[in-house]
Image 1 (spheres, one colour):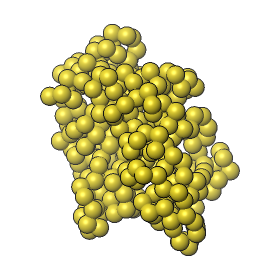
Image 2 (tube, rainbow, N blue to C red):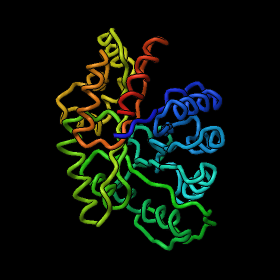
Image 3 (cartoon, rainbow, N blue to C red):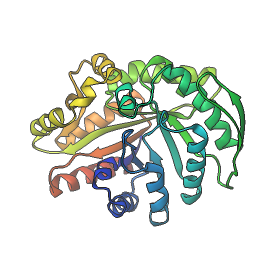
Length: 305
């Protein structure tokens, strides 16, 4: 299991310099990847930020987890992704996702037929990324276009997918899935079987399963979980996440946070690996410099073991 860093928490600071410093440290420390999310209702554009810091952060994979699909046309996203792929010299993994109906409602955007939308979106996006041209008429999206492709290969694409239909689309059409707030029981019993079966039927390679969870080596695990339960209540209100919590047998996101001693954190990470996670994008949830250092040191040691 490859270990990277999810730097999305820094997006709230609205500082490209802070993100650049964090990504550069991740690369120098030996992490394999660096990921940023893009909030559907506003904030920094993840692909633009990754392109902006590309020349300062070498060697490691850089990815989005995720860019919402409903607010933009796949041709626009293809052009942006190809630009970032060029700036990153071929190191981009484009993570996309449907987001959630309640968030699209805040933008005045409908959320009708999300799986049909996802299929149509990929039917336009993937040919543009891979071949530079597309001719497609779908139920929710259409496109007749050609783009100028750079010399770099097409970026990898993964889809945030939780339900069976979305997982089948992700497995059959892309390189895999990127997950947040999903535990090992659900990954092993639901995510991996659906995803792998779809990839196999489509004659695609074994899919990536990229997992993001808060992680911290701490003596205050109870306080950490209480803080998460108070600050991240919205996840418990979203139907797709509620379904995953029910599958896992937990009440909410706080129960999935990886917090505790070094041994407890290592055991939790090994459980994810055994469940089928190929990449872990750590969201370091430290409340002190000491916790931050301990957590990153443990992650690096596990990366190198």
